[in-house]
Length: 250
Ligand SMILES: Nc1ncnc2c1ncn2[C@@H]1O[C@H](COP(=O)(O)OP(=O)(O)O)[C@@H](O)[C@H]1O
Ligand SMILES: [Mg+2]
Image (cartoon, rainbow, N blue to C red):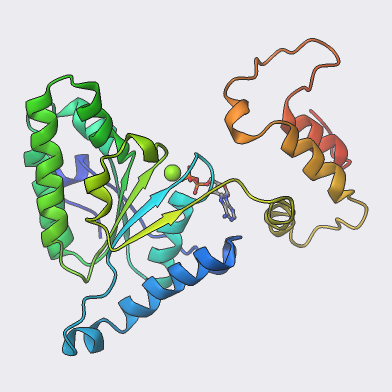
């Protein structure tokens, strides 16, 4: 099933087969996500008793920590399509009409059971903070919150943000759950790599050297480190990780 008409320019459809077990997650986060799945699967029963399953989720954390993958895994586990909406793109493309476009998307939320990932969610908050056009930004944010309040519980609305601090406090109360993502611990990083190399002989890899190299350049610094570093400088982390793993640097 593909979104038709105007909707197709607002969202990207995918049918992921990702599972939560494909992810390395700390136990608290994993338990929260299991709860989402459990409540969605027991939706009918919960509603019979007057409860609403968790269906509005905010995922917050630095880039590359698994927010998009989580949305895919929730879709994969529930065997639902994943529709991704890039909010920053929506706002810049449809300035003045963004609220109307959001309504189209939320109409789909009500009509088609799926996981809807609103990525770059902070674009809504940032817009307001930046004070470009305060009236317009407020209108967009207010309509999003209204749609969110009315979103039916059979679809999952997942919002992803890299800049937690740009978001309005009031926003957080509108979600049923907030999950916080962070860089992996050394053990978690090794687990992620080992899973990706499943089936390959990694017996000779010095994992302590791998994590040491990786932690020299944490995610935050990777965007700041110049590409060509003077000899003897840290060097790009991927190359150093490869060396430590005995892989060709290329
Ligand atoms: N917790 C995790 N467990 C396993 N792999 C991960 C995890 N987080 C990130 N990855 C890997 O990094 C890639 C980028 O993660 P992604 O979910 O796109 O990050 P984000 O959306 O937070 O920026 C994923 O496709 C996956 O290969
Ligand atoms: Mg992402």
